Image 1 (cartoon, rainbow, N blue to C red):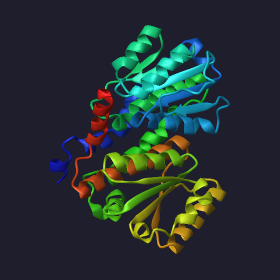
Image 2: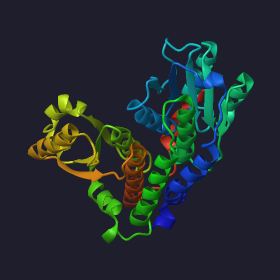
Image 3: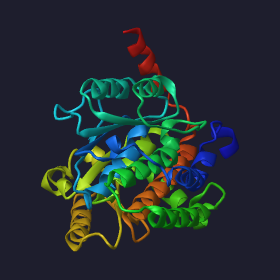
Length: 345
């Protein structure tokens, strides 16, 4: 079935993610940036869709240790505070994402210091014309599958700009654990001993809702988008503790939706005790409302490993659910159709 449905080769791309990360890190770990790009007040990351996920991971990791603010723009317009003390990093797989191009052109007009992460396109042309650093990679696949190349480039930028400490040990931990997961969750591992296939079966025909907290919030969001794009299904995303201040009130209605929902809590034993208490209390509230739920734990001691192992499990779940749904995970026809309509004006 996999050979017939997976015409775009998504299984191979997911299998290759740890190797992509390693190759990209080896390339960028000695990155040098001009002094103008490193002595900045804040960093603004601009990207959309799959090209924004790596930026969101960098922002999440930097949030707990960096004194420099990190902002993420998913849209056309930069914040008004951007000026010549800001570093704007534009991330676009194709280099032709219209929102990211708009944001980058604004950055140049505002006098900001800039860098780009891309495979080419108009974004690379703009960066080269401006004399801005361009971290260019080659990848035969969609932006959501190129996360390893984008993330490692951004981690290197984060090191040089002072958002992060040295990342080599964190990267090594993440890669080792993802390779362990590959042997447990991949396409060739039978369902009887494959937790990702088992979870995909529980999600089949249901409305998935993925919940995360702390550094795992970004991983939970990645689950949601991979379920959308790979499995071709509706999926919801919530973040703790915010969920407990609004969504919890609506758990029981409408009854027709309650019967369809299945909530996945993405957690880790090392999360702060108050958050872990909220995981348990929120799960109890869901059960009281008749909503099925379960918890999946990420791995590792560092935030990067926890985020990437959380993401990697979700990527495999989304692939296996695509197989159960009888769809090729790779094409994103509705996105392409909308782009064509926008191009026509």
